[in-house]
Amino acid sequence: MTTLYGVYASRASRAYWMALELDIAFESVPVIQARRLPAGEAPEAAETPLNTRSPAYLAINPMGQIPALLDGDLLMTESLAIPLYLARKHGGPLAPADLMEEAQMLNWTLFAATAVEPHSVAIVLTYDRGEETSEAGMETIARAESALFPAFGVIDRHLVDSPYLVGDRFTAADLNLAEVLRYAQRRAALFDGAPALKDWLARCQSRPAYREMMARRTAELG
View 1: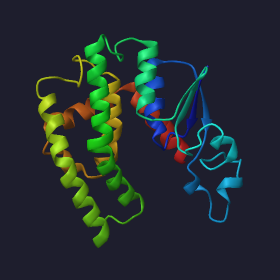
View 2: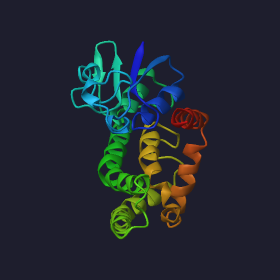
View 3: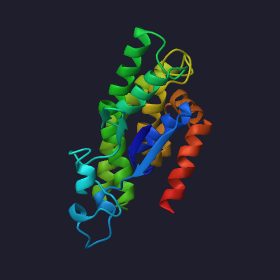
View 4: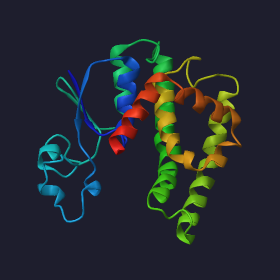
């Protein structure tokens, strides 16, 4: 049995989406971010709810981050690596067909991690803190958008001639990059200058497995 530790309202969403795409059986063990505990609770002592500073979870991932995947004797703790592994293990169209596709999927995933995610996360965190209209918040968003502009151009130009990132089909690379870009969607106008990217993201997010993942996320947030 594959076990996923985390919650849908976290980077674990990537792993959950992939598991739903593959229609594999998995156990979900809820682990919330320690920052979400009510004020006054001591995260390092709290086992209910299990959180990222609970000793029981730190025994699984000493970095105190979610998600984590336990698959037999294999433990994985990097959220963008988990979908690649699950696709590779279970095969099918979401997995690489050959070494070249595997390299391309890895390349796009590392691009997502380095060229996109730090800046898209800066945007969503600014909104989550309610700071998007403050002077500091607007400056953070402006810097993030400026940093994302060249990355959006790279993605958009690639997608002009192909409906997806690798092999003209939806793969783990699309899933990883789409989830990283979701954080920037609070700035909808940012996507208007990259129409091929915008259309591709809509295709990715129209998939039944994505919609199921988001429905579970919404239910989890109450």
